[in-house]
Image (cartoon, rainbow, N blue to C red; front, top):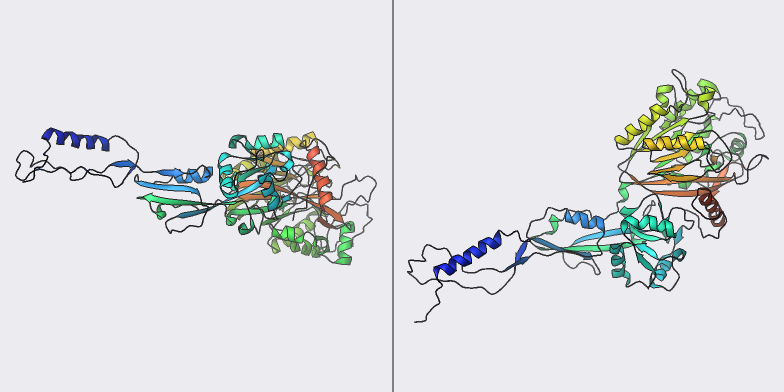
Length: 569
């Protein structure tokens, strides 16, 4: 008869207590792995042990691994960490260097952007240039290494190999923007880290802030995969597959002065009503919201345009609305000094034309109450509100009042309250001014005070619609302020002795809103031709214009330093 080792009752109780305390010890989630077992048995008929329940196999337990690679961006890491997973669930999340071979994997596609400090002239690089900079075969952009956080560096190192010495510099996320501005350095950041103080550069013409972005043609996309293990299943990881969703992106273009009178109107009579917009039509139509500040009332019976008229009382033929519709006007501003030039009848006819074409208006109205109404939009989930007012005409008694049409008066107590109210309702507020006119790039100190007052109330964008001559810009807290954009459709081409050189130059500011936040500001630049028709600037014109205005805005060391640039498509 084969003998068996029979443990004592004390030993059995000791083993059971050990297992009990191990289970209550607050250990990390565990998974069972195959291991040798201790077999405990009792001889048949042993009365002293008959009432004791003894396991026949004791598994050895180890913590379940939850592995997140150092290349995983902060947002994706936070989303995974926030999941309510079973204690026994594990996973591996990292860069996917090869396509998934199992259906259990969860796939992610993370979009990054090549960025530079906002006052950067250059607009586009090629993918080959970017790779050459990474490998060290060409000099770094702007003579500085590319900045990126550790996770971004790890992600692109996994895709592109080790960067050349000195071509890349790791920077803490909290210091990235300040370091880039201080050193005039470029950077690669995840799409979710974009902000207006960054300029997003296109790569071979592709940019994630542009309409028509083709992610398949863009080199700054990193694939990640998550492989569940233990009790985890793919369905438990209910996460967005990407940080970029085109359906959450909204673009707004603000423009300067439109006055379809004098030589501009004369050109329209000869060359066709839509002639002035032919070279910028596609640009404005592409925007989700294209803004026009039309200073002039439409009036049936308006006198024929006189290119040489010195009279500053204006009206436009109602047929000219076809130009504004042709360029895709989505909202019209009525703060202009000339809106009341032909009295209440012309203003009411103008409002009826806009209403017939379903064009929202703001900054003016049929009476005081109507003039204070914002133009509200909800596009791709982004809520955007337009407000505006006329500063000089308050003194001239030409603004709207009780029972009288006109531009919105600058009642700052009411308007700042309205800005705060709209912001509390989830609107991104764009506030425009018809301010006092001058022909210089710097703003008047009182203008700065007025613009910052509405910024302090919560406006995200504050823009000057009055300026025939383009003015400077600044970042003020979380607000982008542009004190004047120049003309859009107006005949000023330096044709009078008092007009300054450069009056033909125009800004069209394109704002990119994503998931309720302003993430980018693009300065598009134009040049007026033929007293009526603007076009996009060529490369040299754009470079000189931007360099001058970055200097005037206090961001560049010299107004004529050598620069590289390219036109914005």
